[in-house]
Length: 192
Image 1: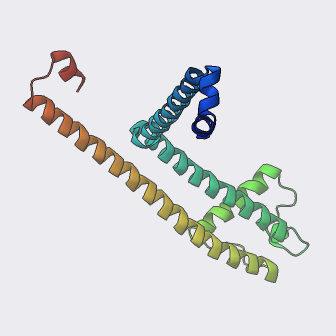
Image 2: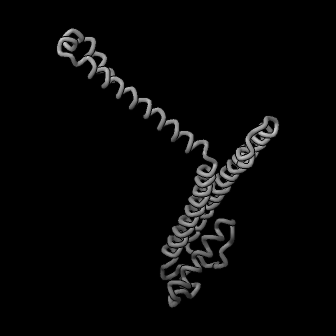
Image 3: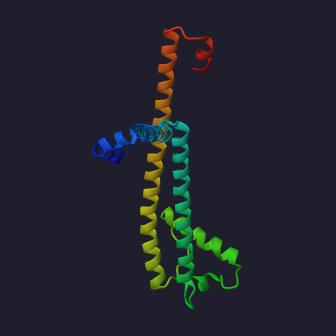
C-alpha cells in the first residue's frame, strides 16, 4: 500500500524529469479509492450481518433446527448400536422375537428404546446380557447429558430471539416517538 509513496520519495527527481509525477498521483488516488471501497464494503457487511434482524432470526432458527437434527442423529446412532449390541444368540433381539421382523419394525423398536433413554425410560425387556446392560447404562447417562445440552442451547437461542424482538420493538417505538414529535413528510411518516 505504501509502495507508491516510497517510490515517489525515492525517485521524485527522476519522476519529475520523466514527467510521470501525475501518473504516480493518479495511482495513489486509485489506491486510496480502493481502500475506501474496502472499508465501505466491510461496514456494509457488518451492518447487514449484525444489524439485520431478519438475518439474525434466520440464523437462530437454523441453529435450533441444527440442534434438533443433532439430537435426531444421536438417537439414530443410539438405536443402531442398541440393535447391534442385542443381536446375539442370547440378546434382547432373540428374547423379544424380532429376528423374523422386518427392518422397519426392528428400527421402530430400537428407536423407541433410544427415545425412551432421552426421558430416562425403562426398557421392558428383563433378560439383558451384561454388555446390553452396560450399554443401556452408558446410553442413559449420555442421553441425559445430551438432553440437558439440547434444552440449554435451545433455551439460549430462544432467549436471543426474544431479546432481538424486544430490541426491534424498542427501536420502532423510539422512531415513532421521534417522528410524532417532529413534523416529517407524510410519506416518511407512513413508512415508520
